[in-house]
Image (cartoon, rainbow, N blue to C red; front, side, top):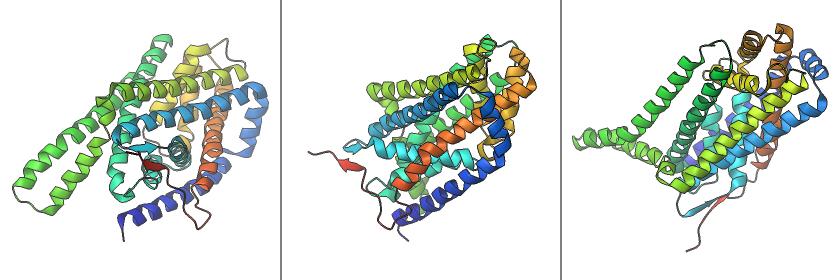
Length: 336
């Protein structure tokens, strides 16, 4: 089977799984708990929090597009295709345990690239670039949260671990092609040569760090996404009447805690652990009653899942999974 067709079939299966997972996640959250949480929150501020989360997702897509453009000289990368791939990845991550959303968005994006099967390692490399920027931004958020919150929630160790993991990924991608090249010269067969080529292509995804302009665009958009998420958490605190008690610092601490605990998700949307992180932060650091903190955690997760569905479901339809005719090409060669 051709690599491009295999990638399309795999991405279609993952995307259908995301659609089914979205329904199951909403059911698992419980209609009663969702209704109680929404009733307790101010509807206008809840709508603001949801809008900010959607804008944050769009900012993440803008960051990824800058990384893709740096790695794909000579092509025009359509922001619409990048936004759809990002939205579908977020939908899958929000509804399925593990990090299935990352390879899924890579496969969706490669459907819009020439020689999609060969482009997959490069696109995965761009995701690693975005992850590096993300880890740096999360570390900065952690410093802000932990310097403005009284108790230590174990965040510094987890954040440091994330930085070490990110650095390790970069080191592997930079050094592995060199090592494999030397091994291949000893005559150990085609497999090592193929692995060397794939890793070299993946390393091309790190090209954004060699372009100050594109790097500034990618970092600026990613930091903007984090700020929008922070404002969303803050707006939701106000919706529960907790703004005077926790405020901007509490919103930063919650955002940091839920993202650190989601580093290795074990349930769809990290259900349960997500709420426990909110209760730990708001209860221990700001004295918010456990029931109120739990309600906040439930509604915050509903806002995140709703964002994934609102942005991801139209993307699923736009990608043409419910029709025979495939999507239009979203990346074209630059006219010479």
